[in-house]
Amino acid sequence: MVGVLNVTPDSFSDGGRFLDPGAAVEHALRMASEGADLVDVGGESTRPGAPRVPEEEELARVIPVLQALARSRFPVPVSIDTSKAAVARAALDAGASLVNDVRALADPEMARVVAGSGAPVVLMHMRGTPGDMRERATYHDLVAEVRAELAAAMARAEAAGVARERIVLDPGIGFAKTAGQSVEILARLPELLSLGRPLLVGPSRKSFIGALTGAPPEERLPGTLAAVAAAVLGGATFIRVHDVAASRQAVLVAVALRASGQSGTRV
Ligand code: HH2
Image (cartoon, rainbow, N blue to C red; front, side):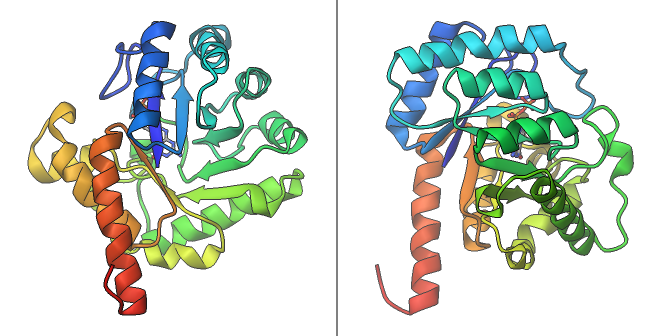
């Protein structure tokens, strides 16, 4: 399970809560104690319509937090959620061990940084940028197109020197997808398993849950847990969530269901 740590003033569900490095470290420690296997630190919101954050500003948000986590002998690995090569490089130097890029190494310099570092990378599916992705959510065959675009991102990463074993793929719930398309991706996740890499899925508090339930972001935990269970049953290896303790229960139940369905044994 991947715990989300947004060091931003404007993230869609927790903006402004962890801007102070002390509060950020405290929250990261809490998520680790609740069962996070990885904590994903981000300094730029990618909600629909979000403006790009200047590089110096993103660095000023995330690097003190990564340094503080390193000083605290943080018990689990940390990833950096960024699409900027300079931020990824500085974050890896400050102790991050994985790069999570919602633009899937679209920037060639980012591909060079990741390849040169040998760090694992999450390649997420999106079209365009958070600023214009909503207009690009048109597909003839949603799953086939997302699958082909993830395969192309993986080929691009490998051509830049990123080893295939270090690649995790993510269909990008809510990124260049309508609410209905996000639901379809979750329901048809098994069709992406043939890409041959572990899948990360990030449904936490997202707007498709709001569209289905009418709940605002801070009240979407029950819907998130249903989506977390669906993602695990659909074959996801990593789940990116804000609410680690609650999601852990959903993951454990779904993992048991998945294992029991495969083996016919009771757990
Ligand atoms: N979703 C968000 C951010 N980063 N990375 C991956 N790999 N997959 C995701 O689904 C994903 C992601 C958006 O969620 P959040 O970080 O809570 O919001 P914001 O972008 O507003 O900070």
